[in-house]
Length: 377
Image 1 (cartoon, rainbow, N blue to C red):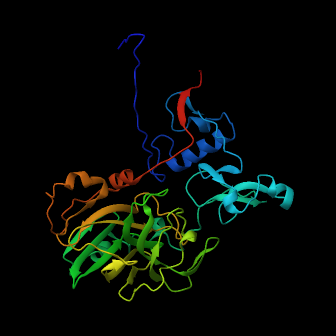
Image 2 (cartoon, one colour; image 1 turned 60 degrees about the vertical axis):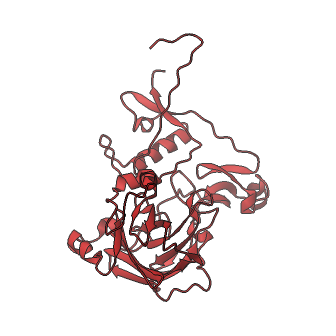
Image 3 (cartoon, rainbow, N blue to C red; image 1 turned 120 degrees about the vertical axis):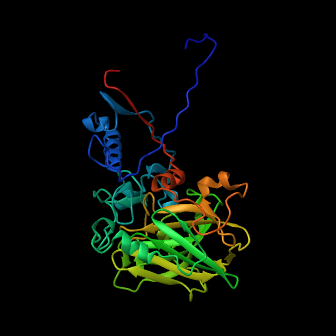
């Protein structure tokens, strides 16, 4: 509608990114690949059909903001990162002192091109673009469908012997309270890359609820290296960890909690199909469970690689559990449960779909704004 000259019209919008592995119905490629192609083309200043991917009609994407970082920092992993924190004394050091160039790389000395990962400023001669982590010998998409059936998973995920359970989508958490301890089991409909559960932390950090969290985590091998991953020839292990308050990559918090009692912790695996962890404890890293109230918990699983890295969209969640009453729900639904109307019992909360849990847990920060505009502007 028309408005007066001294009036202004306001507009509000919210962008929600689809999962990276979801396939675009028109282009036949995944949204993750489409985003990477657009970002790469925009970063190179190219005017190609790649910038029209995801846009309608004759429109194309345009970078609205030029990224300018302060002195002694470079644009790395979608933000400006300090080179001083990585031991590089000044911006010309790499070239002048080491005959290398300053760039954004991962621990495998591959250069950043976009997307999720573990990146930092470094002196390098590498010209290799970043690639995904090497896959598990059998990863989720190639597990045997004749063995890893729904019936087989349902049998593996039986809640017999547990007082309560909560369906988390790709996983199920079941528990009883026995002699002042939580007797718990987390079942994952995924091959064994890693599996973890623990106390959520809301102390701040790049990934609230995750950074600073105390968790129980199972790994399929040992002798971890950020360059080569886990050695799968070594035995699987399960320990307590504290995720770094400032950095999410496993290399920053790979040492288990010293002195933790893990004798009741177990790993269960249907080889190349499903994974579960069991525990009986009253605390994690000295932080006790509230057996008479509500507990903020997190879980995550990886079914792709052996680098203890990114869990992927959907294979994670923040949820609330009342161990005594059996009440459980996703943290994003907390407002609906403040009045305590949802009483305990097995499967008291309805199953949360993969999509709703993914969208509720996303927190996206970007320095790059891309919109679609007409080619003829």
